[in-house]
Image (tube, rainbow, N blue to C red):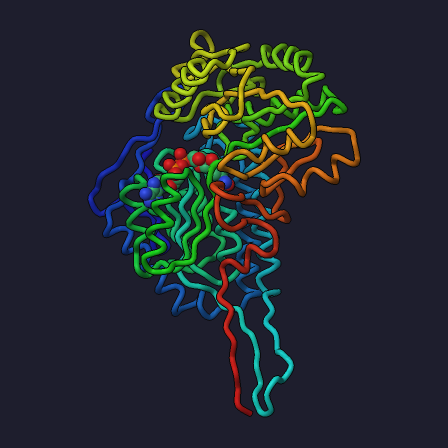
Length: 480
Ligand code: NAD
């Protein structure tokens, strides 16, 4: 299947006519060809977005009308959820059940921000000087570049698209070179929903070319980036050159903390969901499991016996627990980190190798892996692996748990497992992370700001304040 760029309301090949292959991580087969956009294509997409922003139907639309389009888009996403979910699995190998769950939730983002579109209210301040009236307006910024990774392509795009469009901006999306198909399908729904041409554009290709061309384009005024530290730094530097507004959602090394008063069945399930969902390829992975000394050995035994039963296999089958690793570079990186952990003296109590054999197709699988005897100073405890590798770290007191949890360059998320009300209330404020779950893990909502402290990024997505990040405040003084 040959895909097309989506520019100015129509699908077309890249100017060079070049494609790159997209392979199914489970079968290993090339299942689609994605256009390799040129710098000229990026320029055309940005100019189309700029035209749509400055004149024509989108620029003249009332916020209520914009909101209605977002509602219509939400309905179309709902009607097409199965197809969108399936395309995501073909590209990134995550479980169909997980991708369908994500896609079926997306309409709520369009509805929530669609509803907020006509609630962006300015203010008239009290008169501070005689004869001068002052009011505050909120206006859209302009062309937004949304640059997103492969692990949850649509979710991470919609977190940007919905507030950006509700605020009246126009957008150029650059999906990951590993997962462009679902975004291009979503783009086709924009026309059906009635969005004018140029409001949404999609350019595909590698980050160092297409992503950089987009981030550096002079008509782009706001960049919303999700991805790794390297890409994040490059985008931040590009933004600095012309003071573009920027938000960065980056990686994590999140601590999932199990206290001795926790419901241990729940905590085992929470630890497993924390790290082994999506084969660990999630930014919020609870990759460091901090377990209180008094229950450490018994808890690790329960965890190992639970995870040993996990079924690796075809992500499209409903009884599969863990799918393949999405890309060959990611697979090699994970195996390298297993060697690093062993070299550092961590004890591998489960997994520790690739998995091959019947039922695994041509996929690159890594066995769910658990290391104990991990100290927080080790690289395996400090660096993001983005794979099914859990590092178990022992702690004694609450203070020690907090100290270890915060001893990381990241700060995306944390989990706390306890039945103590005191801990449930008093620990979250002490944890330097953008999201803290108590007796839960991996819950997100359109209502709840998501983002990280420190190296996990800048800014927050979701929640009602996210729309402000796509607006400029303007003060108007009128001499009456
Ligand atoms: P990545 O940084 O390699 O790529 C992300 C996107 O940026 C891709 O579209 C890529 O083509 C583009 N890109 C790469 N280099 C670029 C450059 N120099 N200029 C412009 N664009 C560039 O990340 P990835 O490997 O696709 O995704 C995994 C990373 O994403 C992990 O670190 C993970 O933690 C992070 N992530 C963060 C969140 C979050 O919400 N905080 C969510 C999901 C993933």
